[in-house]
Amino acid sequence: MATVLVLVTTADGAADKVALQALALGRQLADGGAVHALVIGDAAAAAELGAWGASSVHLAQHPQLDAPAPDAAARILDDLAGSLGATFVVGPGTEEGNTVLARAAARAGLPFAANCSAVTPGSPVTVTRSRWGGSLLEEAAIHADRVILTAAAHVFEAVDTGGSADVAAFTPALDDADLAVRVVGRVPAPSGGVSLSDAKVVVSGGRGAGSADGFGPVVELAGLLGAAVGCSRAVTIAGWRPHTEQVGQTGTKIAPELYIAAGVSGATQHLAGCKGAKRILAINKDPEAPIMTAADYAVIGDMAEVLPAISAAIRRARGA
Amino acid sequence: MRVLVCVKRVPAVAGLITLTEDERAIDTKYVGFQVGPHEECAVEEAVRLVEAHGGESVVLTLGPAEALEQLREAMSIGANRAIHLVTDGADWDAESTAGAIVGAIRADEAANGPFDVVLVGNEAADSGGYQVGVRIARALGRPAVTGIKGLSVADGTARAEQEAASGRNVFEVKLPAVVAVLEGINLPRYPSVPGRLRAKSKPVASSSPDRPAQRLEMRRLVVPATEAKQAQVLGRGAEAAQAVVELLSSVGVL
Image (cartoon, rainbow over the protein chains, first blue to last red):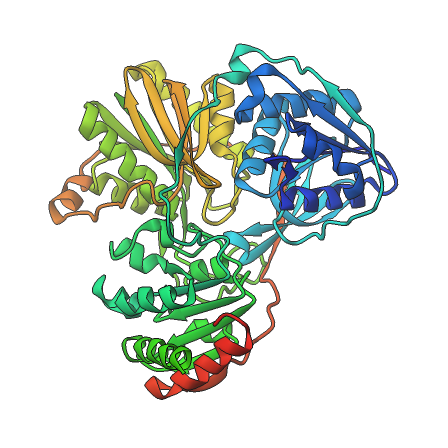
């Protein structure tokens, strides 16, 4: 049995998906012990967490916490871990989760293991964690009395336990220094277009497009399918398409129903970004391209010929 | 303005990853080396800040003797000088890496005054620790912003933008500060031939910090098992279009 504290990040009254997965890992690590969930500010999200495995929920409320403030969140987490005597502090393996847990670890002077896909209690605790965006795994030992880590996204299954938990609201102690890093404004996203990370279908072009103009058929097919346009890193480096369209380890990680990758060779960096796709259709001149080992379907051929032919066939099918 | 940018030499992994016999490193017999994409952009950002505001940019790495190559690369696009914390090639965890960098920053600042901005990649391309920047900031008592895709500096304040659901979050922090950037903040330039020549004579200060006991101790690397897929070939060239339409229809995306 262990005492576990889980940071549950939220948006608009609901817990983040990956945070519920982290809660499932927390429950596993507690092994019958207490599973404490910490929520910053979001009362509606806090009320739901008993059903997702929390045995008690701590809701931090503070007038200065209406905007994200990662150092404040880290301080609240670290203070609470101390007062609960938590042996595991867990968070979601997201940008927000990783930065807050890293800051909590820096504050406490403890190690931090990001994006863990397996955790084995013991002395020392050992973990399996992601390297290279998940293309490689690392087995590591954590030498610390309190283990601070995040759960890799989409590894652990969130479990609806049907339980309930009391929500204890409290006002955390915060200094000005904790609030020095705080969101002071928002820049809205340009409207229109399909969001790459949420798209049901993504059509990408790679180096095989040959030029910025070579993306015409990619954009055309994406338009017909209501799909998001993506690309490989080689393409953004060449300046043919903006980085916001890059699928990959250092771009956007996608999880569509169907991913159409045209003229994309399938470098490790790219596959780390599209492995969440349910099905992959590769269109490539080279039947030996690495993308073929990740694809479910393939068309062997030049994307400049294949894509317009697909678009034309879709138009015919719809016209009929 | 003084800007420090931290980079890490990593294998230029492209296709299948193979490991060394002791399973503690990637086999690099047939692989080159580079700095990760986030850090390439961090170097470009450092050079741009100094182009806009004057001063100097310093590139730092903790890595083996061969990492001098990556320092020269950064200097070839405009970094003024380099600090090399030389290791024997062993893996350093993020906590000890940050500790060594903090030591080097304190030493340089004692002689030359504070770095207004310390730039790091958001996470290392290989180890993906997500923490060196915030650990440096914590040790030096400075603010850190992470996941940054837009940066501007004026009047002793950094304005930094971070991607969020449906838009961007904006932070404003007082300098000196630590900024962890993501690829996409800029499009890095290529080094010119004169740039490469100049880089050869730029100063590099080397020292060899002690590697402390590792509290996040890497024991073994594992190439994840993936099901070897055999793609179903729908056809060749334009003639495959009808088969693709049938596929689109059968998976319900048409």
